[in-house]
Length: 292
Image (cartoon, one colour):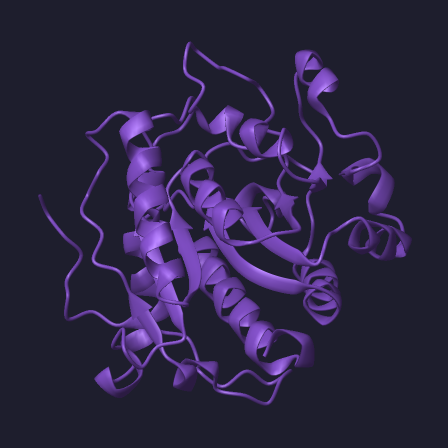
């Protein structure tokens, strides 16, 4: 099977900051989109994400830091798009668990949202008092979709039965998903866009340890058009960062993923947004007191 170029490093950083031994952070690329039900192509997300990363500035103005110096190791994941979704989930689970056991801060880039099922399983085994912060246009709570419980539309169903699930930016769902919602834990876009009062309430519902799963379609398509199921009326950039910074200030973030980047060769701004978001989250992780 083809494997990501082992010589490639995040943003072209030197080997001094990119070996497994010297890196605090591990990045697992998961090039998988076999469960996507509208536009396919998110299996290319990790490749385009890493390509865009080569063009970012590595100094973060807001935190006055260069977080790459804490080390970022890219896992040479094989291209797994030809395997079944259940095997993919098992593969992601095993890979995530491997690096959690090495006491690394594990992050993932997808790929469609089904990749989160395996990683959340692994985080749940390691961490007590875990909650999931799910930022998405969709609730993804179907128990099964098109005959598959590992479809991207089911990505949060398993987690919802085990952990507090705080869902932000929701603006599209099927009526059958209503019975799977955690009452009071869903923050709909039509309710939150007018003010910031929701932020404190959402953070209060999170437990001590938090895994963050961000679907690119949580953003408004005007700033992030390259995703599989874009929905109008999403979050803007600075509202998203304002909220996430508060989360990192109040809670212990134990890992995160960014999914559903569907590259468009005519438009690279979404690729760059995903990279900037990733790097910003690492900057918050290591520069804000609670998460150091």
